[in-house]
Image (tube, rainbow, N blue to C red; front, side, top):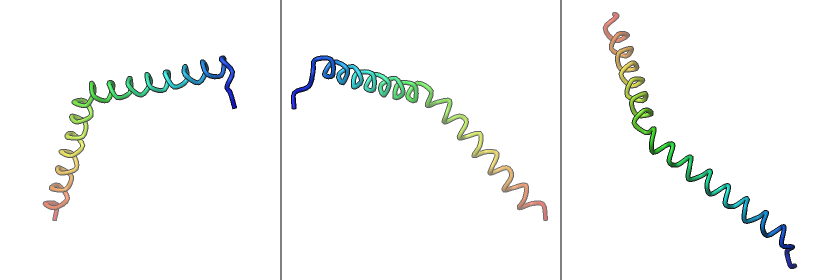
Amino acid sequence: MRRSRNEVIRWRMLRQVQRRRGRWLEAQSRTYRHIHYARYLQQKHQRRALLYAVAYER
C-alpha cells in the first residue's frame, strides 16, 4: 500500500527525533560517567567500612 506524503514525512521526523534523543542520552552518560563512578566508589567504601565495623564489633 502506498503511503501518503504526510505519513512518510511524519514517520521520518519521528525516526529523526528518536535518533537525536538516543544520541543525546548517550552523550550525557559519557559526559557524566566520572560522576557515576565517583558515587559508585563512595558507596563501595561505605559498604566496606560497615563490613569492617560489624566484623570488629565482637
